[in-house]
Image (cartoon, rainbow, N blue to C red; front, side, top):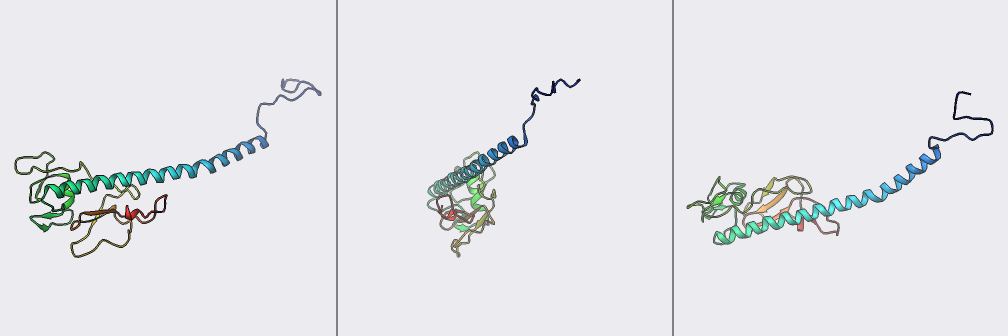
Length: 178
């Protein structure tokens, strides 16, 4: 006989592959492991986003507080005491300003624009990856809930900034109330 794997009638077949049953057992074990690991991984991703959101809010709130303190109690968003165009507050945080809130497109202070910058760039909302901001006019209150259409919601009159993302965190706390 030419096939060396089959020696004689009474000899055993030399096995070189897994049986179908063995493969099914391995697949079942992998499925069980995946069912345990994937939810745990997703939970860690959620907690990482929550931590990043809190860190971003802390950074922005501290920048707003520093700006307000250095500009005689006027929060970012105002120029010469009057509400500036939409987005003014962001420009005031990332560029240099004077005492009246006027800004120049520079990150290096000079004799006239001695304040700032307060942040190097604007962070994205970690949940929806957006950096857009809904500016709330002075005559309006903050929305009752988040829509998720923007990354952030800011009200210059009060210096209040929030995440614009509906839902709750892993502990059941509304993300909008962070």
